[in-house]
Length: 208
Image 1 (tube, rainbow, N blue to C red):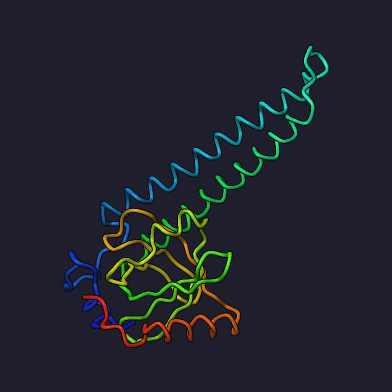
Image 2 (spheres, one colour; image 1 turned 120 degrees about the horizontal axis):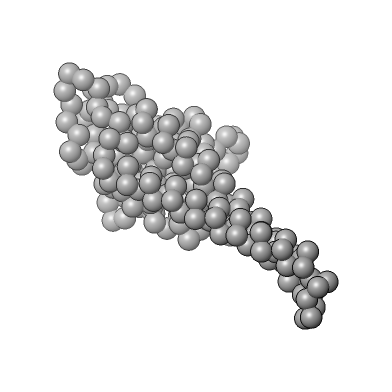
């Protein structure tokens, strides 16, 4: 994206000057949102570890207990591993988001959601400089995806590389931060782009 075109679509509060625009992470709202994202992931890690420890202790102590433990420790252990995996995945995503947010500024983009049946909807962003459409898949559970669902303006903030992935956030750069992956399968990309075109993304007026 050309610098001149990028400057014309900087989010509110970002003004072009002789220096490069500030990184997305320089915004207090974004830094706070990233801190909350990592804290939530660490919390799930701690809960998972606590449950896993408890299930192991219960399994080892089972024969000495007067009340049979049955399959409870095993079930708790499975739950613990799921929570631990979710937490570790969240920590890893937090690190990826920090690197990306520190390396580039936010860009305001028009966006539409493309439903995918039981799966989280894909998001198709439009490059404000070239008009190219970028199909992206949010890496988030459905209950978090709605936090960055485009509002009445049809705009989200984006920081990343459309060929690989990046971070999306509601306007303002705070609230939920969600990592997205580029849709690489040609057929899936084409279907998402066509759905976005039918929704009018190609003719949207653009961020203001």
